[in-house]
Structure formats: C-alpha cells, structure tokens
Image 1: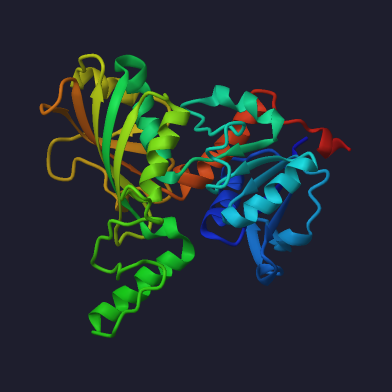
Image 2: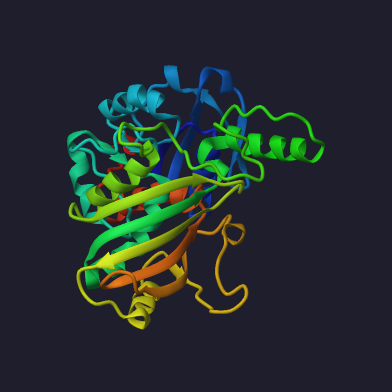
Amino acid sequence: MGYRVAVVGATGAVGREIIKTLAERAFPVDEIVALASPRSAGQQISFGERQVLTVRNTETFDFAGFDLGLFSPGAAVSAIHAPRAAAAGCIVIDNTSQFRMEPDVPLVVPEVNPQALARHTRRRIIANPNCSTIQMVVALKPLHDRYRVRRVVVATYQSVSGAGKEGMDELFNSSKAFFVNDPVKPEVFPKPIAYNCIPHIDRFLDDGSTKEEWKMAVETRKILDPDIQVFATCVRVPVFIGHAEAISVEFEQPVNVGEARDLLRNAPGVVVMDGHDDGGYITPADCPGEDAVYISRLRRDPTVANGLGFWCVSDNLRKGAALNAVQIAEALVSQGLLSRKAALS
C-alpha cells in the first residue's frame, strides 16, 4: 500500500516538477491531489502517463486522512495552510522560506543531514532549504567531513526560474523585445534581465546584503555546521533553468586537490566533470532535467591557507526544490517516520 499525498502549489513551476518527480521515482502513492489557489482550481495536471489530476482549492481542502503534504505555494500561503495540514495529521514538507529558520523545524538535505528528520514530530513540518544552499551543501558535505570547512566565499549565477513562471516569462518576453528594439519594462526583476546580470535577489537588508545572501549563510550553518562562515553574492542571470556557483572554501586542515576530487566523486548526489580542456566542465545549459549536483574546475586556492575553489551547477527546479522535497519524503519512508495510518483509516 502507498500513501495519500497532497501537492500544494501544484500549478507553479516547482509544484509541477514535484508531481513529475513523484511519478518518475515511483513514490508509493495510493492517492494524490493537486491543490492551488482558487483561480487555478479546475486546471488539469498529468501525473505519470495515465492519470490526470483536476486542481482543487487549497483554501477549502480538508487535509484529514492525508499522510503527506508537499508545499510550494509561496511563504504567505504556507504560513496559513501548512500548520492547518499538520494539525490534521499530515506531515508537511515545505519548499518556501516560511519555516526554515524556526528552531523546532528541521531543515533537511537528505545527502547531508538526514538524521535531522527525527526532529519533525513536534510540529510535523519539515523545511526544504533554499535552492542555492542545497547544491552548495551537497558539495561541501564530503569535504567538510574530511577537512572541516572554516569559511566559504560564493558567487551565484541563478536562473530566472528561481523566480517562478513569471520570471521565465519575463526573460522570454524581454529577449524578444531586445531584438526588435521595443521598450522593456521589468516587472518581476528590478532591471531588465535579457542580456544582463542583476546582483540583487530578494530584498536588501540593513547591512547591504540581500536576503538571498543571508539565506545561504544561515541555512548552511543550520544544515551543516554552526561554525561555518559564508559570504555570498547572489546574481540573477539570463538563463531559464540551472543555478551555477563559483565557490571558494577555506578549510581547517590542509586539502589535497586529488583527494578532494575523489571524495566528491564518491559522494551521494554529486557528479564530477573536471576536464581541464575546452568544454570539460558543466554549464547550466547542460543540467536541466538532471538530478545531480555537478562539480567542475576544481583547483587549489593559493590566496588562503588550505584553500580550494570549484564550480558547482545544478537544476534548481529539481535538486534545488522538487527532487529534494521528494527525497525527504523517501527518507521519511526509509527511516520509518511516515505512517500509513491515515491511508488505512
């Protein structure tokens, strides 16, 4: 027997990817419902090759009897409906920023800290980290276990799909306008995104950093180690899918590049493509639809003691969001933490 699963925010880019990923990975589902805003109710979404789901209204949906809720509707909606689902007995995996830094909500990347799932029982909510954080900590984990990470300096190159369907539409439309010299009025992004790079994701904080940059620092410490220092510069780039990161790491212990490459090759969820020749590396255009975190350009950083630099790329809609959420669900099953009682009632 399988589980009764509700996907909230099902019509968004991440929600659709969650439904697709559940089917692709054959997650044990007895019943699945697609939920979204009232204006999206009635739309249809495919689940696998043979089943079509009719979208229902999140606001009026009764979560009683459902085992699992996979949420990606926006933080304001999760703030209302995730606790409601949890109170009805449903374990919630939330992809928004709403609960990530709350001390009694585990923030989980299954390849990095699956043991944290045991702490979900108080609120029945598990948080999915920020997309840029997920791929970085997957790469850092095997290196941290061996050399102990002291400090990370990272520059991100984040695709427009991180801003949802609206962000992808704005890149498409502004790119067309660029070629015919039509005026471009940005709505999703603060400046025109076509053929441009924008060093501004989320709102600015008092210290001059953006909230996206703050997320990378505090989430890395919560997931991996509270003593790690992170300095991030997060940039939106005119790419539809796939986040890239240039990462420089300072370790407590001397690091060997060859050994580090082997550690990464043997790490779960990581693929190393590190040819030192033309095209011997992964770019965002190579990764859409792929599950892995890809590592390239590994080299010693001679400017700091025990330094290592590398290039890190991943599909932000998959490992950065939907896949990580489904992997959390799979880990709940494997650890015996997801009950079928609701499905049997």
